[in-house]
Length: 126
Image 1 (tube, rainbow, N blue to C red):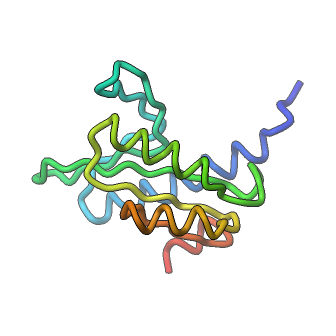
Image 2 (tube, rainbow, N blue to C red):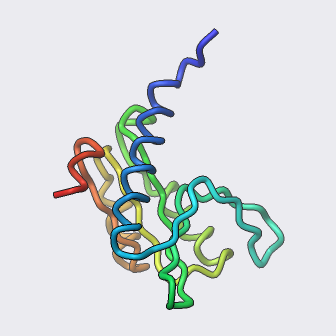
Image 3 (cartoon, rainbow, N blue to C red):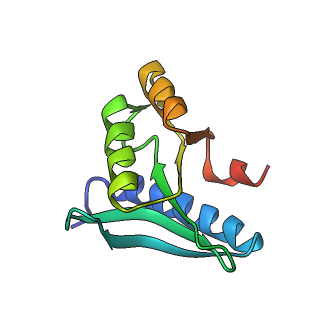
């Protein structure tokens, strides 16, 4: 029996693979669906963790597919920000094929989280 959200999961997986592939062009080491233990002791599953080979900084990336939901909400950005703080990340990026709520945009901008919106994963190349 197939899962009901298999299409959404496939699109999110495609998005992760596309981003990881692009980051490797720029000499980033990437790990997809990485579980990181935060300073609090909580385990966080991060869509993509990227590190530059010679730079000790860590970039966390959240991927959100339109098939998951139609909007990227404020609470999702808040949760991602909390993961970044707990996991001691230097930067955070959210890549989504969804519309983004105004409050999510404002919060992300304030906390220097970059939101990249595309219609489909292949648009990231451009």
